[in-house]
Length: 355
Image 1: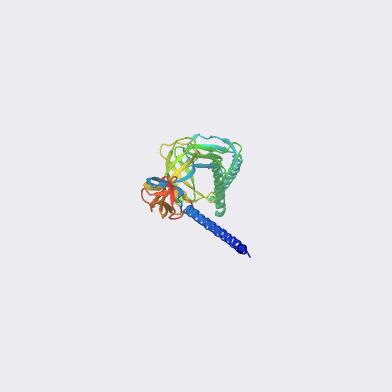
Image 2: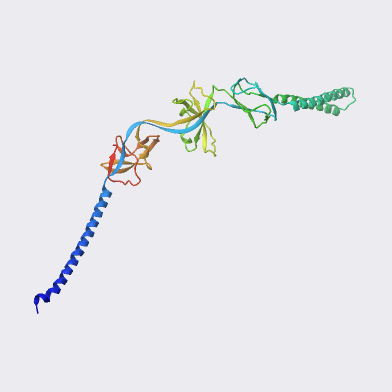
């Protein structure tokens, strides 16, 4: 038997086993290297600095402003209506016209009232005749005291009824209760005047106020004496000043708002009914420590320390439109993240732009 021939199958088998072993080792090496690469990538992504925008804490002035809308009206406007129900026969005053107290503004149809007065006058004349006759008979002893008293009482009642009707006749002339200017006229000849219908509004245009509507969420911030800065498209670029002198105790539950009265500064003349944008200075602080408003989340900020984000609790003061006051928790020249992400973690490496 040939020796080389007898050992050939064993050698070939060993070679195949060795090849399989090499391939297995190679696969495991690939898997290990893959896991290592993934771990390195994960480490790099989790530890690499996150790009953020920072802002340096600075000193400055800050104000808390309550925004509202308002309109100009007289300080003491008076609504004029009728005390009786009757058609309007004539309108004697127009909008913008100056009037004095008790001046006639309109007249009503009083024909029915005059007829009533005529009837009462006739009844009064008859009652007075009966009274005179009863007094004469009583003085002569021909009438009892009870009869005389009844005649006198009837005559007195008739006189009182006629006087009351004549006094009511004046109510058919609508008069102004105050001196001022007709601000609004809501009546025309032929209209039916009633006690519930406003015919005129009278006021003094020299004594003005601004009535502003303030949201109920902001009303705790408003106080009497607060400065109000107002603007209107009627006077572009002009800032009108005033101050709060009254806050109505009752709010409007439908609008969820309260009315605030503002007195314009002296010498300021504005058209009645003009609408205004109103900014009420609720609070103001000088030389305050300021950060961007979006930097504060849940009374905390993310400060930058040695290239890492550090969350710091702070005491917040005035929240202005562009800056927020920090009363405690930061110092001058600290750097904070202007608009931190919700994914930011304490101690995380960051790359800051802006500080």
